Amino acid sequence: MKTKGNKDKINIITLGCSKNMVDSEVLMGQLMGNNIAVSHESEVLDFNTVIINTCGFIDNAKQESIDTILKYTELKEQGKIDKVYVTGCLSQRYKPELEKEIPNVDAYFGTNDLVRLLKTVGADYKHELIGERLLTTPAHFAYFKIAEGCNRPCSFCAIPLMRGVHVSRPIEELVKEAKNLVNKGTKELILIAQDLTYYGLDIYNDRKLADLLKHLSDVEGLEWIRLQYAYPSQFPMDVLDVMNERSNICKYLDMPLQHISDNMLKSMRRGITKRRTIELVEQIRAKVPNIALRTTMIAGYPGETEQDVAELIEFVEQSKFDRLGVFTYSHEENTHAHTLNDTLTSEEKQSRADRVMEVQQDISLQLNQAKVGQTFKVMIDRKEKDYFIGRTEFDSPEVDNEVLLSAKDQYLSVGSFVQAKISKATEFDLYGDVVS
Image 1 (cartoon, rainbow, N blue to C red):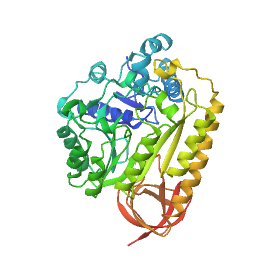
Image 2: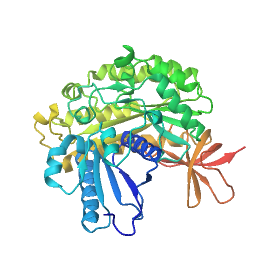
Image 3: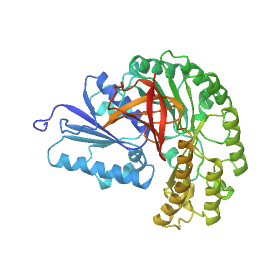
Image 4: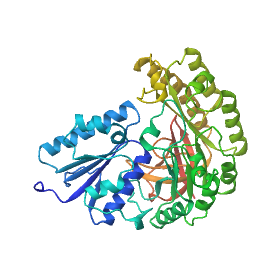
């Protein structure tokens, strides 16, 4: 029996990373292909079924997922919706515990259960829809997942437990999807995977990220291609050659390093040393002199000493990364690091992260102020109050700098490109004027 006043419609809730977002977009594409009404994170209660795509990566994300499940099971108990389904990483990792603790969820699904999930909601998996997605981002950019899972042995990471081993998608399939997206107005693809640099090893017996980039770069109408989540160990340097050759491949690389002290890198099982890391950063910058390097670090990993923190801060000071973020260590069950003694309090971990970010804030301000007077190609993402907000090729959505352009005396189309001269800079934002 259906709840009164609610349409026969499914609402998708997405939690966690951009890889989860792509999974939700694929799910919505399949539902629409089955003529099932679907919405994404609807703010009105005009649906009778909800599917929650959860994150299980770190403590805060797990708690957000659990809180969201409880919110919708409460609505179900109140008779406001009929069905609650849970999928994604948390469900993959903790299904038995979740079934016991929150039994009024109608069904739990893992990260590779799309076909079963569709069948449960009365839909068939349609192979002809491979590459078809209902974007949750603005139409002009899309996250583009080139592989699933991970083969890396990092001690702190539970992703392989939730996502399985690395599985690359064939080049032909990816090119087809890219063309479909461009035909619908997408101008920027943000390539994501747990490890982009491993791409191709499983299906082509060789690292093929550079070849994939060439094929994607040839797609007519694709203006920007951006690389996120590269792994430093055994980094394929031919990727940089393609970046130099092709104007639509952004001079941008997101390469999480996690730490710099040899003690930490060894315990983290990163497969790289401090010396090799420093050499790699230097080699990348030598090959692509104007590249924007983004990285992330972990603070408070088990056994991290004050000397390790000092080494990390010194490395950040000397390396002057264009973008840098810091996570506090999360003690994850069934990972190798979980066997280590997690002695630091959450406050101590956060204090160490804050110290690193204070250094980075000064670096960001210096680098941004050096851009004043320069002109950049800027993609317009949205309008917010008195500003059109955009990005340069050196910035990824949501995590990096933005360029603010006055909306008082001009109109700019979302998704369009303009030339903007930078007039002012703060730590994490640029202000500019459109130039003809």
